[in-house]
Image: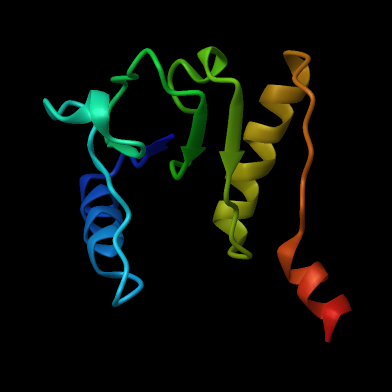
Length: 115
């Protein structure tokens, strides 16, 4: 899996979080350009570098990730903030216009139903 975090600060926060959360856990990962990347199950990229054997892409950027079409699956996270929702809607339209099948899950609504 590749986490696309185009802002260096975000990529750094994700890296630190994967080292420390949960407190007793560790998720093996490294930067996509690291020499250990071929052996890591989770990669973090802040640029357009896309390793050839990743099948799943998690986009944490505001725009469509580069080369997203070469991945089997693309995951997007959109917060409730209006600017992020607007950007998410733009990406949604972009994918739809190109014929991609989209499934979406509103976790806020799902949480409300389970209460």
